[in-house]
Length: 585
Ligand SMILES: Cc1cc2nc3c(=O)[nH]c(=O)nc-3n(C[C@H](O)[C@H](O)[C@H](O)COP(=O)(O)OP(=O)(O)OC[C@H]3O[C@@H](n4cnc5c(N)ncnc54)[C@H](O)[C@@H]3O)c2cc1C
Ligand SMILES: *[C@@H]1O[C@H](CO)[C@@H](O)[C@H](O)[C@H]1NC(C)=O
Ligand SMILES: *[C@@H]1O[C@H](CO)[C@@H](O)[C@H](O)[C@H]1NC(C)=O
Ligand SMILES: *[C@@H]1O[C@H](CO)[C@@H](O)[C@H](O)[C@H]1NC(C)=O
Ligand SMILES: *[C@@H]1O[C@H](CO)[C@@H](O)[C@H](O)[C@H]1NC(C)=O
Image (cartoon, helix red, strand yellow):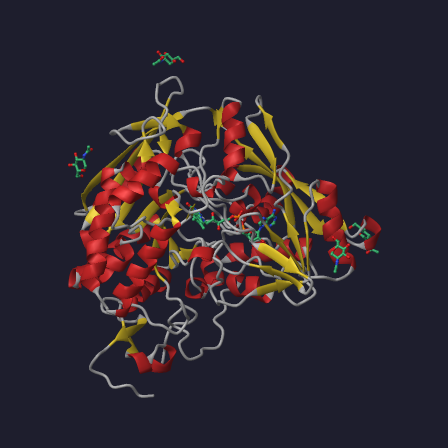
């Protein structure tokens, strides 16, 4: 996800940003236990359903044999299991196990081995290794990993499990799982095999198994090791062009084809598109640039709290104009600071910014801890009442994206101000990924969009212009057939997902039944996402994206939000504010 540091205090923020970028309070660990058991949370501290997730026990293997023993213990005792990581940055409740006697296997201490084979151009890492550590080791040996998500606070096992990606239509493409050459998986086994075994999937005759394991949502077993392809080290040259969004629908395909790592950030209310011109350069070109993306820098906790308080006030006053002013300020600040690019590692002095692949491909300086500063953190750290938002991420076949874009433009043109709530975060980030052989990946070249928007402190508070965001969500997932990113999204993004994957879905289930016939690694939570089932509707369910409304009570009639049809996509059903209608309850 990406979010903007929208702040009114430029001078204060830039002071902290330039002087204290790498020092901050590290995120809290996602698993916390006491005498009564454990709870697991995600990085935002709140699951989509706002309910806690419980387990009886957590174990922290450090070697593959300890990992095998942990799975064996669960299999022998018929326990449900989920793998959790040090980061837990996935938004949906995939990591939540069923039942009160379930066990968690954490990979947070399973991170000691990273092996590079220079002749074969591969790296093999324990699944708990962090993306940042993996990249640094590979680069130190004179190689690069060609793609990664933009956020470095993830583990290699966790990031491939949800299909995480950067942006590229070139080479093996922008999804990390398409760079995977092998996976070792620990799966349950029968008693004569010691209740658990390690299977090594290396392509060839295992192709089908590997295609299932590459993106597997944690439901096949525990990934022990991941082998990735690497390349000779290279550098990158980056330029952001802040310009108009005219003809965006005619430009995006060429842009994706022309720039190996290009992307586009579209601020629809501001009628602005920011084209990222991003290409590779030979490693001997000079440049020590760093991409310290502004949304992932440390923020003074007081600033994050202030930004949240302001956003809440604008929400409760239904102040569109205030949101648009914030969107303007944010965009101007991003332009001024090159979105966090730093030519010499310290300051932004102009384009292009040239640096090593490992310093450009991903960032997350708010993650790194320090004993000196205790008043800065990642802006969304749940301990400090900072930013709190939803993230919608939809993946379109290239051929469908133009029509979606034109629909959003039509919606925007009715009243641009209503989209300011998206533009105070990171607008609509448009990225490119290649067709994949992974069963739960994309079968064809695709375009991915991400947008963030305000989430209220409680589940029953409606949000300013939420109908517009709901219409965009339904346009993407229903009208234009987009698939969800498995690691992001509200529940509505997953409805009907099984059908969207067609025969590949059944191939995936076949492998799942082979590796985990007793469904040890499945839970009602992960089933809900994997099978995309819409549960029963309740009062207010549409407000949090847990249903599509069909009756007013699914919105908030008492607060003036009624279920109505979309403005452009009239089959959409959205919660819209109407001051004219009198409350029915
Ligand atoms: C700030 C932020 C920015 C992000 N940016 C991007 C981006 O640019 N691109 C993108 O694609 N995504 C992005 N994401 C999403 C993120 O990449 C995914 O959610 C990723 O899966 C998180 O990895 P993790 O290590 O935290 O795994 P977790 O969230 O802990 O786990 C994810 C799933 O994988 C399973 N799992 C984890 N490890 C293993 C293992 N060893 N074996 C078996 N199953 C396992 C878990 O059970 C769970 O089901 C972002 C998320 C955040 C919060
Ligand atoms: C927790 O799991 C371990 C196996 O890793 C087991 O030895 C221990 O008895 C379990 N504890 C509880 C309370 O279930
Ligand atoms: C255990 O699994 C092995 C290998 O799959 C198989 O040969 C054996 O018959 C199984 N034993 C039992 C008791 O099911
Ligand atoms: C930025 O984009 C505009 C519009 O597409 C184009 O005219 C201009 O030349 C671009 N600027 C740079 C520096 O490439
Ligand atoms: C970089 O190396 C290549 C050969 O690998 C050479 O042709 C080129 O001149 C070098 N460029 C610089 C800037 O040193």
